[in-house]
Image (tube, rainbow, N blue to C red):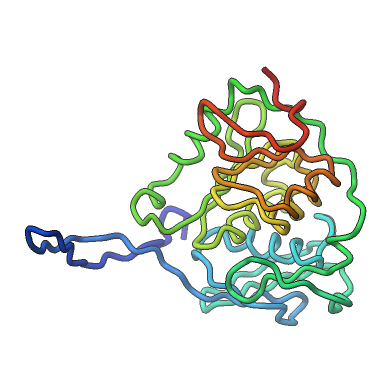
Length: 258
């Protein structure tokens, strides 16, 4: 089944009530379904997801929680339509010593404390011309009809050298970012890029992107104080309130070329 054949929404009638009366309306509702993520046949956690790009999600989810550290560790990913993503990797299958519950939804947002406090590797060497930001944001937000149809999904895309590399959607902002990280790990996109998300730039969102080496992290909305602190520690360019004609750069504005 191709990506285009996967049902991502259902139709549901709603009743619109206004001062002048009632009217039935046909509405698109995004599909949300549980998937367990297993590493070497051990279930690490479960998440409610939009059931598309699940190989990427499995890889990105495990990277975000510190179980996978580099692309070369991944050997195989199997997706079972009944609700399981099995990742096989050459890693030690052990629990992190101390974890922090993140701001993510679904109860599976946990990162090792050592990741939050550890050093960052150098980021990829990429600068983004301000003139390309309009195209980046518009191409990302118009690359799928699901967002305008359902108003229920977050999106995340990667931009490099005037081109949208990938764009992923999910009912959760963290899941959409995890799918982009998975695309990088699986060799389907490069970290030598700018990332744009429709979600808030909280600590774990910034941490994931900086750990995989993305130098420019952009959002439609706002950062948190710890997200900003991690951007400063890693040296990442942190961009908030991104619009086609305006951005607010909270850290390292030199990567935005004017």
